[in-house]
Structures are given as C-alpha cells and as structure tokens.
Image (cartoon, rainbow, N blue to C red; front, side, top):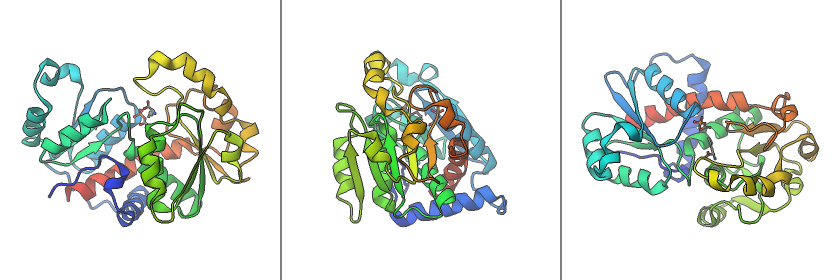
Length: 301
Ligand code: CP
Ligand code: NVA
C-alpha cells in the first residue's frame, strides 16, 4: 500500500530515527549505490514560490536516478475547473510520487486520497514536515541526540512550528514556544502533541523565558506566504520576538541558531546572529536535500 507524508505524524518515532540516520549516511557520500528512482518521474506541483524545497527535491530526485517534473497552477487544467480527484488519478498513471506545496492543507489531503502514488507535503498553511525532518537531522548532527534537547522557538505560531511540535512529540525534543497572543500555533496540534507520552511542549509570551538555557534557538519569518494582507500589524506585534544577541545571552553558551529560510534579516533575526558561528542555517538548508532523498527512497522502494 502506498504511504503518504502529509505531516510528521505519518511517521513513527522509529521511522524518523531511521530516516535521519539514512540521511546522515547519504550526506557522508559513502553510499553511492542506490538509484531507486531510475526510470521514474516525480511531479512537483507548487501553488506558492520556493527556493529550497524546489531545488532540493529536483536535485535529490535526479541524484536518485529519477526525473522531476515541476508545474504551477497556471500550467495545468486544475485552474480551469478539472477536479483534484481527476487530476490525482491521471497523474498517478504517469508519476511515481507527487510533491505538493499548497495554501490549504485540505488540498494536499484531497490529492492524497485520490492518488495511487505517495503524496509528499512540501509545505501547506498548516504543516511543513520536510523542513522538520531536515531540522531534526541538523540538531542530531550538531548535538548528537534529540531526546532532552531544549529547542526555543521564538516568533510566529505557524506551519513550521506546527511540524516542530509533532516532531518534538515523536523524538523527545523539549519545545518552548514564545509567540504573541493571537499568533499561537495550531491548538489541535499543540493538544495532540502535548498528550504524547514523555512530550514537553510549553507556550509562553516571553521570548527570554523560552530561550532560557536553550540548546537550540529557532525562528521563522513573521509573515508567511499567503498572509501578506496582515503583514504590518503582525510585524508590530512580533517586534519583541526577534532573535538578537541580547536574546542569545539567555541560551546555553553552545546553543545553535536555526531558521528554515528565507530570512528577513532585521525582522525575525539580526545580521549579527544570523552570520555568527552559532548559526547553522545553511547546514539546515543543505539537510533538506539529504532528508528528502532518504524520504523518497523509503516511500518508493
Ligand atoms: N525553507 C523552505 O521551505 O524554503 P523555500 O520556501 O525556499 O522552499
Ligand atoms: N512559514 C513560512 C515558511 C517558509 C519556508 C511560510 O509558510 O511562508
């Protein structure tokens, strides 16, 4: 039966661990034997722009021997009234997997329910699970473990932190989230993630409290794609949630700084912190490639 990857909860804790270890192995360059996508095509259908997700998937699919096919809504008949169900059924006859980036999460769920091939969430308004996999790999690489590591997420309660909450519940990461009132992450995902055995996820309005003794300090853009209409009001509310050197003083001395990118320097993070030796943002971006290759390999073999 086909497996989809719509959110982190589609994977067990053991599967996450296996994927991270496989991604580390792929990154090491020691295993060049696997080309599980030879003769296969993988579709990428993106409603929103992307730098990392598109390039890393396209490069990763090629490196695994396959062919990526990228299309946007303007180029396909979905925009002219063809249903998601019919589109998904047709694409399943050509493709071995489909990577989607959408506004509504339900669009990805609908594709997944009609497609006969694995559907991968390359970001929706609700989740960003491919990012969370790369984040877990990066923390594992830098800190040697996930269980018991304290991650402070400071900023907007969005798709990225929703996936981090699910990731924390599966791996024992301790998550302290600081966000302003009205910009909390999903209440349903928070509740479900908090109720997982051994999970430690807290929300505060105080960024300094969240950052206290943190091993990892993480942020994301204040205005996600599709939320541009409320940008100015939101930026005002988030002004005191910036990652800067003052905030970093509360974290552990060897804390790392993470940001899924793109960064809006001077908003959610200062140049000083982003360019400091503590910042691992470019390793984090690189790890998208390795974790996505491990994911494709596991879903398609
Ligand atoms: N982090 C991330 O998903 O970046 P892109 O929007 O550039 O794909
Ligand atoms: N939260 C951001 C992530 C971008 C990679 C967005 O959805 O725009």
